[in-house]
Length: 493
Image (cartoon, rainbow, N blue to C red; front, side, top):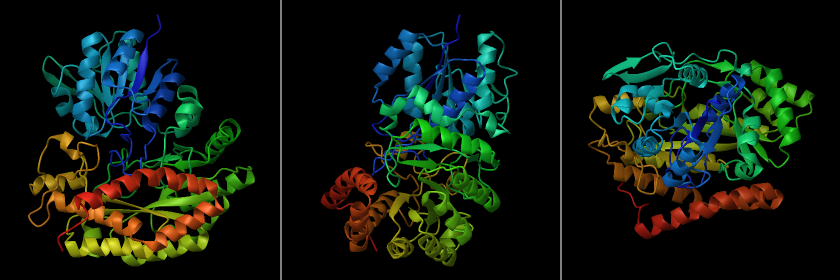
């Protein structure tokens, strides 16, 4: 009998982006693919299993609908994605599933159970195990053990409770050769199809788009960063990446852009240039964007542009050195300004990311961040409150200083699912930080003629950009209007 496996991005709030670095419902409707879950689905397929991959968020499934489907299909193993802000909801979903299908094994994955495995398991008996760290190999090991009715004691990368004793089998075995994983684009097509793919949206990227990885991990150590496997940089071979891009070019003509979700795409200059040269040589005509840092040089940016690169998503965070140092960012204002000049010269657009309420932030430094964002005049800008997640240095800092106002993880979000920082410092309340974020969006978008002039010109010159701006703007304008009416953008100076 076939062993039935479900890879589940469980239901939660509408448009909740669970896979993003800072999970929430965004003010531009950006919604990430569950790409780590998708890659693990591919690992199971390669091992001979036939898992289903369901994204209940993008399908707008309720918990009841999800449970009904699971009960009907009678899955043996459910791998459930989760995140810190959604963990309490996800535990309740597990309980609802277990009530209807008591014999199925439920295992939770991703950063929250990785960093708080025992806490997660002690919350409910409905979760049978959690996967620690990278879970592509772990879910295969887990399926093999369970389908053969073997003990989990030797399954590397799992943790579970047995006779009230917490058992931790270490971190998951890393996929050392990423070329061994199936193409995530094929997995999207097989499990989602064109219609569902068009439901995903990334505000700074031309729609429709997909997200894929050419490498995993990052060599840098920003204290707030919630990415998995950050200290284990591994890259796919260039021929392997080119083969997937050829697949996309042939089989997904409806796409307008690819987002390389590598934590830092141009991490290694030589590889980046070699990959771009291969794209050019092999006739890859796809438009793509990526995550980058401000140390990316002009030669690399120019080669990226030549190979179809459109935009880089860059974490500036703040121009204030004392604040940058507090989060181990490893950059300064001069580097930030010079990077923007290089990007402009290369013809690469920039999506600037900024965080307000960082350690050492004051009303003066937050205003400086807003002014700096307007000075840079990036193609798009994101403004987030400081969010701290278990496993990060920022979370440890906040705990040690008693700055976390609540450990109810559901409070990491507002009732609507928007970011709701829980960092409460004597000189800066969470409410004030949120107001500063609203002020930043208001000043950058609503009160910024330079932005609107550029957006209008872009829309006229390129209809694809116009569609992107309209889709993101439709949601953002509602939030800006709400801020005006509720005076959420009025701050204490």
